[in-house]
Length: 484
Image 1 (cartoon, rainbow, N blue to C red):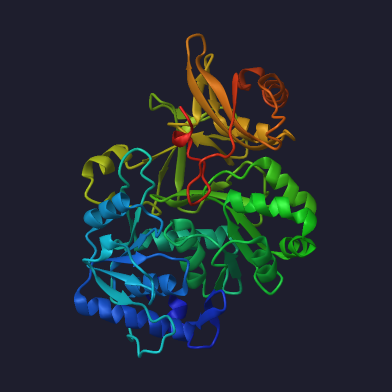
Image 2: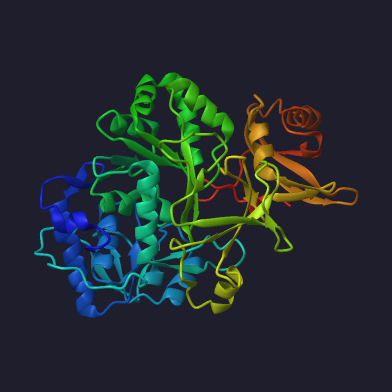
């Protein structure tokens, strides 16, 4: 714990480390609470420990306590279905489960020893964290499982430390910063960046419990300096700004607004900037890699880009035949591959999947496709499996078409996919949630709208209207769940 969170050993003060709603703990109490959890885990010789990851003070204390013990935390999504949860428990084989007192756990966890977390730090704690190698697992985080059962990405302590330090460099993140967010804690965005990040810096985090624009305004207007969110949250902020002057004031006064986990539509970027004078910056990462790139706090916040590779991260774009994409023209598309100390070590119990994920010389195949602008900034255009459309001899990224569609006043939400076409190879299909379901924009209107902004070959050939787009807990559109 001393290497990951030096402030827990060095700061015995009453400075607040974590606040969840009305409840908070100081650094001194957090050290005692996490130390108490760690001592109990060490007594049991626990290697992997499940954490019932509700958005609560107990979850944060539990994960820090697991790291104190030198063990690996396995965050469990409380919304997981029975089959998924059973798979994760069978695969990770945790020694026990940590939960908040009073939490009702599902039957699948009934066979595990349970320890209720005392988040108030009333115990004596443990004086020192367990000595642990930097390569030792810190977390086992399960992927979304879009192509089969979820895989457990083993994230070493080294990756946590290097990612958070690289972000501190990019964002000028210090112990004076107070972060506000309402992200779930079973994912690396909310847990690693949103909780462990402030603790590594010696700063503070205020978790909203449940995201609301009122909560964002309240916290940013009362001392918070940074906001982390996902596009769904920033979309709600953009929608609320015209009616909420306190929200405008809050965002205008923030030091840093960061969006991640999916691309933030350009339309929302522009609405927030116009109302507040502040631009949202983006970064790019994955469960397996933590963070790869980020727009810098002292650089240009350019809508649609995720910045440049973080210190220590190597990034390249690769064609399907393995050749490198070297053009910095904003048009040449390739799969992102990365290499660096931010990477996971393996998929738990899946040597086949681990081997397939890496090239022979150690580059991780992300499955994401992107272009690079002349100044080296990266623009993600989608997932290789679902967002790279090959139509009429062109490689087209779904993301830029989605952004163009969202600029149409009749479009509330949009997703773009490809489907087989005898002539084109694939035709572009737009899935649209209209602003007015009684008068949705038609195919010709939207095709012309896109062609004027991008290029004729990028226009949708088919438009399908929906009441809502399927999304996961992080707000990402699940394209595989669209009607066939």
